Amino acid sequence: MDFSSKLLENAVYEVSQLPGIGKRTALRLVLHLLKQPERRTDDLATSLVDLRGKIQFCENCHNIADTVLCEICANPKRDNSLVCVVEDIRDVMAIENTGQFRGKYHVLGGKISPMEGVGPQDLKIGSLLEKVKEGVIKELIFALSSTMEGDTTNFYIFRQLEGINVKTSTIARGIAVGDELEYADEVTLGRSILNRVPFEGSLRQD
Ligand SMILES: [Zn+2]
Image (cartoon, rainbow, N blue to C red; front, side, top):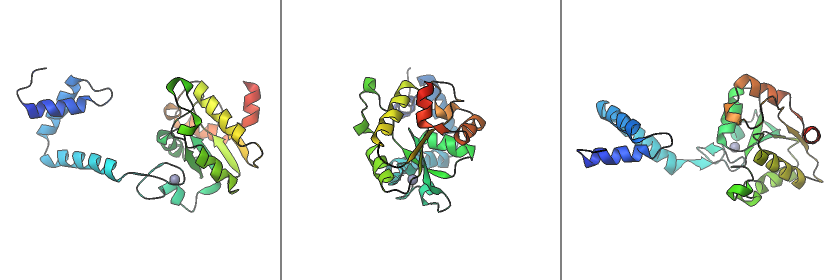
């Protein structure tokens, strides 16, 4: 692509580095921004700089937060004794959208995947076990995607909990195997949280 302006070329290059955006789309977006009032570009740039510079991770659940605790952990109406274990922040958003869960979360930051070199030590498993040992949590709900990596991660945590008095359950598998949580529709996902099954029972079915 030939550019008459180095400024234009740079902007198109930066936008085209985003996933799913080729050079043509990047050019269209950049030209669109040029037609907008300057304030729009300023707001876009500022919001991205702020996001990177100011974002924090909740010290309790590792969800994205603006302060030390995320809004969910800071909410006194949420049930401390019920914790939903998820892979990443998009899962928190998906489950929150169902409006069916009043407990708290624990964001692992991924799942165990030997193929990708991700081991238990790379995930927030240690802090989860510490929290469970404090004795406030009565039930852990595993809500990882039903892939081999998700199952491996569930099982690893389950084994680490041996001898600790906590109930474990898993979301009902109305969600097809291999589906990512964030793509499940809200009704199905909401129902699968309400109809969760004991974790050990889910193992025997497999
Ligand atoms: Zn939190």
